[in-house]
Image 1 (tube, one colour):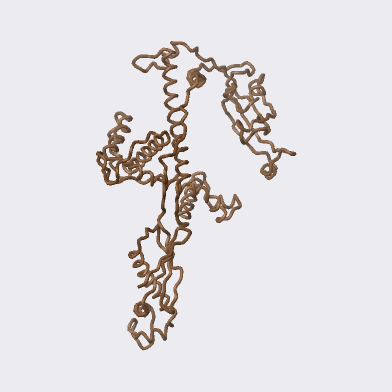
Image 2 (tube, helix red, strand yellow):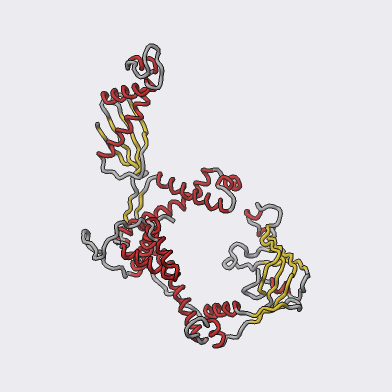
Length: 472
């Protein structure tokens, strides 16, 4: 068997394999014997007719076709064994030529390859988040609202009230030079934004449905109905989808309530923290709120920073993969979309019909996102190995213990859940991802620890299996 290989541009390899004529002859005789067991040939018991009789009765075409299929599978396996290529998935028979020598041509998708380049030189400035006093004040205000005294009022609506209203709000179509192609294509009927029989609305700058809503309701009484139009401010940054758009309201007041907020005093702080061993003063409550806001802001900033550094690493990496991987990723994304649609009572076929797109157009829409997802996932997987990210069984057990202790008396029940292999491996994947993103942050700041030389094992006990990075 003579094998020639040729790398193709789309991260595939072509195997051209010549086999001896005698091997094909043997394969055809085996095929004829198999086919003979399926047909009745006059004068012979089933499966007992000589080869030449079978060829005469069945024709050489069906026998050759069956022989090529079966011999091709054998030849393909032999070619793979003798090659040094790592494949992504099964190859396909691209061509077969009978003369001058029986020759099979296979096209095989290769496993993805990743060259991270000098990824450890990637740097990105990090700006620690600062929690402003206004954020602390908003949190305190939220606590005040949670403990507000709410009483029914028989006075006309005033700013600061809480009103229970029936609301029908419709987005009016754009017109004239301001209308976009999208707006011009909308149905002639106004788009309904809100249709609620009884919705509670705080008439404050933070609580009102849209700017101007409080002013439009001032002076209304219980049972009164009022129609009016409001426009969103022409601020594309604050209202990216709605800036400048007009909304028509039909509002009926069902109930009016006054809202009395507690004063910000030490007594208020003590009531908020009354279940603690030592209730806090207002100053101590502010300090705690600031600490928690800072911790949350730090976590968010770190996650955002890690993704920014990762994107830079991905940008400079050289990633190659076959079209088959991209098609599989698009399949996965469409399956995920179908699952989400089914939760809303629809299917992917419903979406295709409603959108007016063909399956091919829908797949093309997913292509760019699929490419980004593949590249990011492959780079993360390669980084995991390059950075020697390992989650030990001890790491896993410690994390499980940290999780279950939060459930108090039910800790043992939750601990038993993590005895299942699937649960442990899911958690292991999560820890690997967490460790990897922590390392990405260190790389971006220039603080990554030195890597162990090749062949030198860590003093930590390696886990039996390091989870692969998952796709987004």
